[in-house]
Amino acid sequence: MFRCIELHNTEKKRESAYFTVEAALLFPMVLLFIILMIFLAFYSYDRCVLEQSAYEAALFGTGSHLDSAKASYDASAEAAAQLVKDRLFAVQNVEYRVSVTSDAVTVTYSCEINMPFIAWLGEYIETLDFSLEVRREAPRIRPVRAIRGYRILNGLIPQ
Image 1 (cartoon, rainbow, N blue to C red):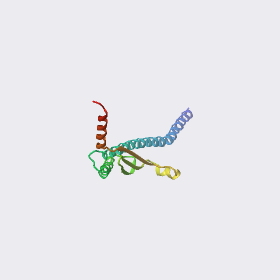
Image 2 (image 1 turned 90 degrees about the vertical axis):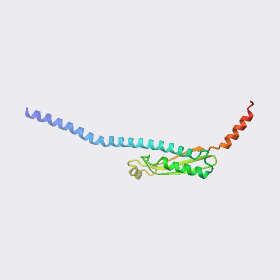
Image 3 (image 1 turned 180 degrees about the horizontal axis):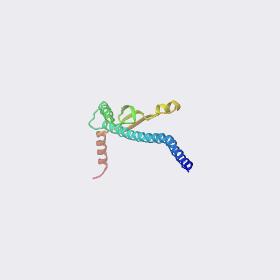
Image 4 (image 1 turned 180 degrees about the vertical axis):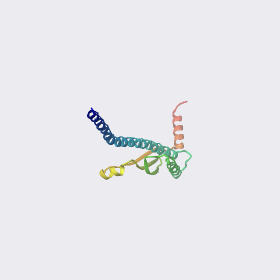
């Protein structure tokens, strides 16, 4: 009878050992998956912030109160620098470029995505490019042309 109880306890120990081994193999994979999902959420947030900030900075340079392209450039460049300051999590080395033409103001953000294991993965896959470029454009407001166009249309419509 003593022998039977001893065998029964040994089987329970073996069974609990299987769960320990399985957990030791499964836990790191689950943890890695959770960390990558969190960083994916950070990346999505940062991309939305960059897109919105690029368009908003472009809009700063399209105001009717700005007389010259230099004033438009300065307004957009200042806004581009301030709008993303201390708001990004998963990107690094953020740079911006502002381009002003007679028709539009374009703001472009360039940055690198800072994800876990990227440097390690880049050693094995050479074609990986973890950089992000966001470009948004806003048309420049020309109040003189809008007023002239309105007067022309107003003259064509009989009263």
